[in-house]
Image (cartoon, rainbow, N blue to C red; front, top):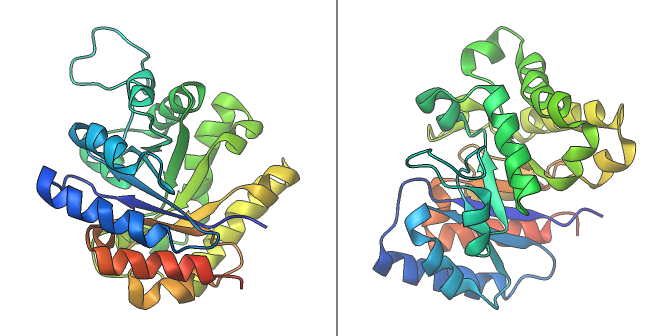
Length: 254
């Protein structure tokens, strides 16, 4: 059985004092879980604080992005090796905000997936469609293109080193959430698409849902058979909300 994962994406939020309280609360919440795993992906400047606060706990940590380059004259970039210096476990790649606001195409995302996985990190690959694409019936085509960029570069077996997060763009930060049935349909498509090439990987690969997940809807989402947890944005900044989401993941399938 796949172990649920709840990963918080703080985005560009945080401060030393508020982080300390939030990280402490996350550690306390995770200590009560029976099976679900918890991670937080924090802004680069706070990786040292996350490492210090979370070391020895049941909470993993990671970054919200990673360079596709291992080193060199790339001002402002952060490599996988640098993230490993702070004992990061995860790196988010291909988040829709990176694609839309910073011009990252699927080829760049695939290169970042490769850099993360070869650098000892577990990439969390984000895929998802816009509202216009959903209304045009293009959801499966879009997520398949985003997934295939990775598999064309690295092969299907490379998916065993990562996690996939389905995040419909129209549900990120909007307060709108895909219904559990809508989310499950895309998760099922992704798992079946992978199973056609690598059945064993498809069975074990964790597929997360992201997009306005909160305490009120988490249990219904996580009850779906192909949803293995969540990539949580705004609610990961609220200790009470995040704790409730973690509990919902812990109870899923039991």
